[in-house]
Structures are given as C-alpha cells and as structure tokens.
Image (cartoon, rainbow, N blue to C red; front, top):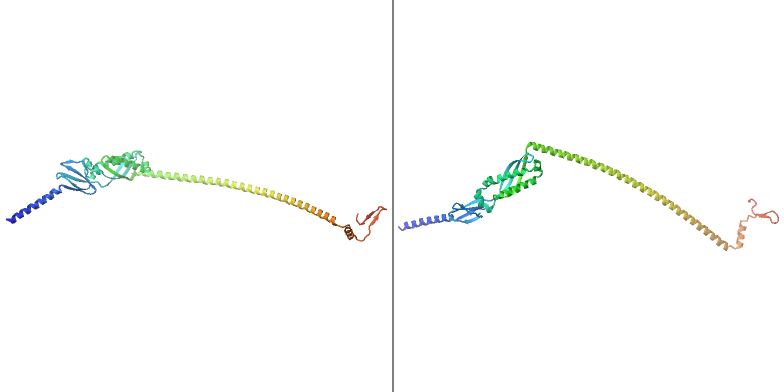
Length: 309
C-alpha cells in the first residue's frame, strides 16, 4: 500500500515538473542575432521592436522574429532615354529593414524581407530608373554615369525610407543599348577620334612651320649680330692700329728730339772743354801735307783742296 502511495506521489511530481517547464517556457522568448522581435498580445501588435537577446512575456503573448541583416537586391529596369533610345539598366541595391520600425514593417508590409522587396523596393527601383533615364540622352547616360548613379541612388534612398527600408548603397552594374545604337556610338567615337587625330596632325604641322619661321629669324639675327661683331672688331682693330701708329710716331719724334738735344748738349759741353791747341792738333791730324794754294793777289783766297770747289 505504501509503495502505491510513493508511486502516485512520484507520478504527480513528474507531472508537475513537466507542467512547470511547459509554463516556464511560455514566459521566455529569445531573439537571435541579426533579428528583431515584434510582440503580439491577444492578436494586437504592440508598437515596439525587441532587441536581440532574452525577453520575458506573458503566456498569452507571442514574439515573432524578423531578420534585419543587410541584403542585396539585383534588379533590371528597361526604360527610354530622352532621345527615345531603349536603355536596359542593371541596379544592385543594398538595404535592410529599419530596426526601430520592424513592428511597422510587420504590420503594414509583412515580416519577410522577400515580401518587402517584392511589394516595395522593386517597384521603387523600376520607377526611379525610368524617371531618371528619361532625363538624359542615351549618349549622356554614358558620359554622365556618376551623375546618373547619384540621381538614382538619392531617389531610391528617399522613397525606400518612407517604407522604413534603409538603403546603404546603390550600384549601377550595367547600361546596355540596342545593337543599332551601339554601332552608331562606335561610329561616332571613331569619327571623333579621326577628327582629333587630324587636328593633332594639323597642329603638329603648324608647330613645325612656326619652328621653321623662328629658326629662320634666329639665324638671321645671328648673322646680323655676327656681322655687327665683325664690323665692330674691324673698326676697333683699325682704330687700335691707327692709335698704335700715332703713338709710335710720337715716340719716334720724341726720341729724335731727345737724341738731337742730347747730341747738341754733348757738343756744347765738348766745345766748352776743348783747348784751342787741341783744336789745332785736330786740324793738323786731318792735313795731308799739301800746302794751301793761293788764288788772287794780296787778298787772295786760300784753297785747301784744289780738286774741290
């Protein structure tokens, strides 16, 4: 009998433990990393977003997890440019749900990011690409790729934010046009390159012609300067030679004058110092022994040298 009571108590204890575990589990909910939680109480959504981690709740409340990790949407939009060219644009949009407004997304769009993309983000991308593309010609879409990208990015970001979808990046991965337009662009680019090449060749010829003119002018100036230099050198040489002759003549005249003055002074001094007897001796030294010859009468003239007149 006692064993039966023990068995009954044991069974009741196990049952109570299982019930406690079941009731305890209904009071706790864990929100995983990369998610936010929304709470629904008796079918009513509370306007709060639950962070990652452990949350306590009443047994009659439910918590649903919604992913908020960044996702990438690849979309292709076909539109017409302002010059009516068909343009196919591939766009990659990085986005995530606003963590603070997860409850709004759950209530107004749905709890799945795939639903957000289908119902909100993709239509925004298509409409934005078409609107921006229509403002440019096909050629300017290529030339102004950065401006086009910014316009698309700004528009998508603003419009997505009204649905609490946060856009973090927009990339235009490709612009493609019809085959006819591609051929036309290639032909135009080739024509522009040919034109630029001809312009460059023309400029090169002009530069060469200018160089020839400048060189000719430089050669002319060099010849003129050289001739002027030679003329100046000749004139200076002639002037120098004349000056040299003048200086030599003056020097020679001065030397002759000084020599004559010196000789005269020497003769004077010699005359002053000579004795009359010496003079007579000098005369006798020069006499050849012949007597002077007299011509005429009493006052006749003595001829020292009868052969000379």
